[in-house]
Image (tube, rainbow, N blue to C red):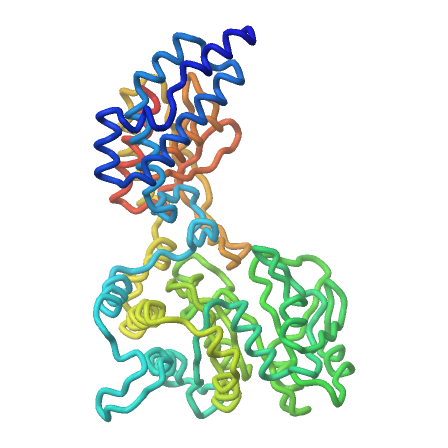
Length: 477
């Protein structure tokens, strides 16, 4: 396009004031306000200028664009005023997808949070006495039930562990280290100095806590003697970090929790474990092997365990600290605890989640229910969805075997057999098809492998199957 023709097209663009006087746009002003509509108009006109400058618009294209100016402005307004944080359909098969919000909450958690949010609550009020209360009592009572002795077994201590809640597991680790080891040394195996999502590194949080890191052993082999030889008058804590998002295999060695606990008792040094994943029950029946539970750690005699609320526990984002009452009370008295505490919505959602555990109603916890689904159940749903798309000529839909993963920095080696929808489109690449799915309403997030879009219905709620079918049919039409 010649420069002169571009200049002519630029002159044909109306001003913002001219557009605001158009009847349909003026109606938008009455509905949404002058500032909102003005911003939207500027945005639409700016895009037209960019398209003219880049040669994407000729005279005919500009004429069509100007005829559709009012609808374009309305669309811009709707985009500007809709929520940025919104639901998506997780068809990736990653159960605890960190980027997609990790654990979905149960209906009871949502109902309890809504009830406590829309009315006043007894967050820090003792109804019986009329006096001020403590917010952590609402969940501590349930943790005591869940982490107490099981009939016929002996726990590591006679008293039930105490528990406090902060805003995430990084905060829990920070609070525990700052309370128990500020100004002193913390001994940890070199093979456990992990980095997880968001560049969160154990050594960095230890530095922020005011404790000094004392690395022992090698990347793949650490013995209890390495811990013992490193203990000195400045040692405040022995730390075990669960490798929640990777594995070391081959020529490896690490001391057992029992060995560390025995050493800690012998030398009067507390033992802390950053468990991370937060499983409260044995997940063997859910297809997850060898994932330690909080109770396993406490039974082994660990003094303090930190873990997440929104991973394998299946609740809201939270960092949870359970263990010896005297040590937890010290953390409760730390001024950092107030800075890191959670609000009534988190307590309400966490309390409802814990009540499901107390009742052993595991089907009520979406994360556990999703893990328990069999490949056959998922295959049946996948077949029904594929059948509904049979008439869409541009799409080819196959059902293949695959694996779901836990994700979220939990159970790194665990895979759960599943059935996948493998979709290709005659006139679009797999990446383009996946992009169209993400631009659906609600957005659908899938995987792309070997030139195909893969959708795992394990992480798709049954009520969303029809939404995926509609989106694919629309794209393939």
